[in-house]
Image (cartoon, rainbow, N blue to C red; front, side):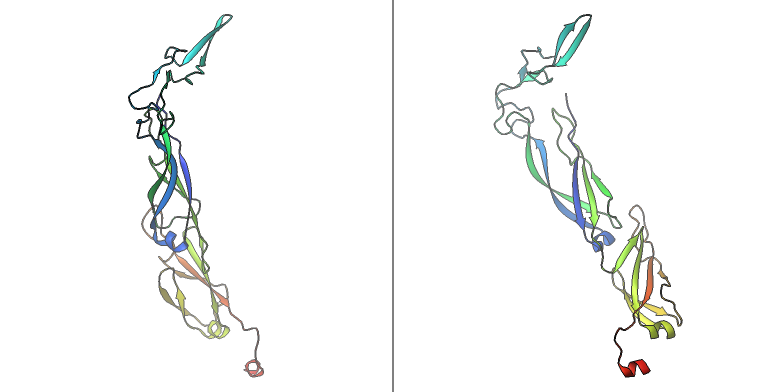
Length: 231
């Protein structure tokens, strides 16, 4: 009888910025679809599947083994109860053909590596009128050279000169989108964390953003002149 189509998996790689803001992308999916020539019957035009002469349409053959009666799928019709004497030329009697299908996938903001999207009914078509399967898009997010993600929080290391850490100052800090000005208090120790609310990753399942943590790192020069050493 009708059987549900198989589920499909597609691995999609996106940039860090696309995972932050969300995106839409078109993907090419090879899948089995119902043959349009025979409408999935597998029979050529002007003909139809016939009753299997071996099992008389039951799809099973019964054998007597002592006191037991054993039923097995009919090998002639493979349990369907029908045989195709004149197969469709387009699908060669299978009722399905392979095609490339372009599908648009909407990637929500805040999605992380390993999370997947389920696109209902975009898998392989079912057989004998069965429903189609689903398509699972598994997301892989590229690493960012400056930010790294822990949950929905973002972290970044800031190379700050020793005089700025000791005396204080203001530095321009990049965000995922745009820039921000950070005030460094005098006497700041390397490894301190400055929290910027609402500038982390979006919550993929709800509204709002998490936080961004900026961690100063002492940027010490490696080669000093004699005058620089004296100062």
